[in-house]
Length: 77
Image (cartoon, rainbow, N blue to C red; front, side, top):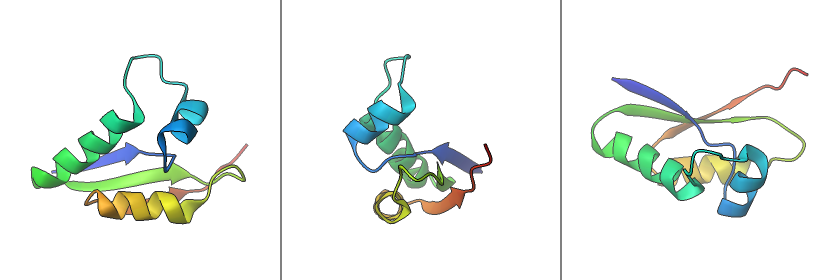
């Protein structure tokens, strides 16, 4: 019924740098998954961890454009 997906970036280069994907999945795959969840009627929240390296507004805008809600999560070192 619901999905929460860690997006953590607003573009492919930022995603690759921050997430260091090792499973062959890319920024495009994450975006497609978020959009497909919404199309399937699954309430989806894209999330990002607050960090000085990230700007939340572009990530939030991307999440919305993909049909998901957005939630930032605080970072606790």
